[in-house]
Amino acid sequence: MYFSLLPDISYDEKPISYPFSSSDRRTAKNFFRRYKVNDDVFSNVVFFEKYSVKEGLRPDQIADIVYGDPFYDWVILLVNNMINGSHDWPKTNYEMYKIAEAEYDDPYSEIHHYEIREKIGPYAAGLRVDETFYNGTHKLNINGTVVQKNGNEICSPVTVAEWLQSENEKNREIYLLKPQYLRSFVDDFKKQMYYKKSSTYISKRLKETG
Image (cartoon, rainbow, N blue to C red; front, side, top):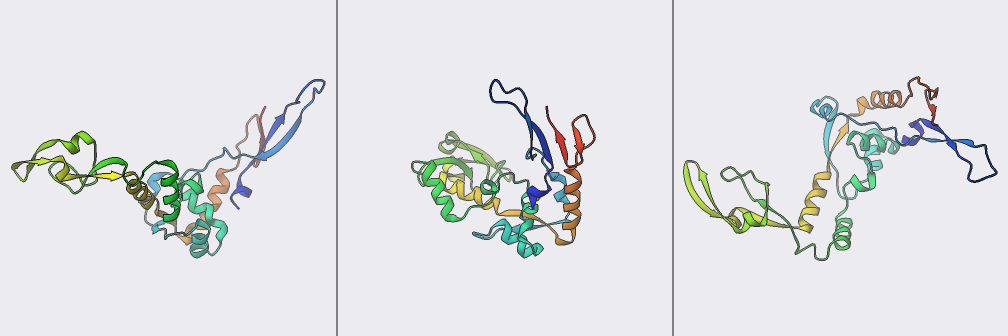
């Protein structure tokens, strides 16, 4: 459904070699025509709701559950500004295992970064720090009392495998457009795909290039 809504572009297919001097025009979908949802819109809870993607669940399956039609999977991807569904969509645990094994020599031992375990002094939980901080000693003001802490007391190493899994879990938290606003969203998408009149304008669904 998504590709059928994209406008077309007519381009000049140049002759390959002499003695051909004329060229033909070809029509194709304009894949460079993008629709991006403004991040500010998510602050309006009237239109969206948060959704946690369960293991192995695909966009078309969620679209079928929420909108009664699997072909509205593109709405879910666009709402979450996912350009590449296969890359941006949360992976299964098995897929993450395969990625980790393929891209890293030892993802289960290799340290990706160090992270503050829980808020302490000026440091927030989850804050990334480097190896020097981890191996160092730090004076902290905690409730008016200055204490000395070793870095390994307040932060922990995060392996590549743990980091990949954590990033994948973040991808599971998405936004869903509420069903009652689906039609308005689709209509707005169609309108934004229309071309405005210009020197390259042929119709609202077709323009040409040089």
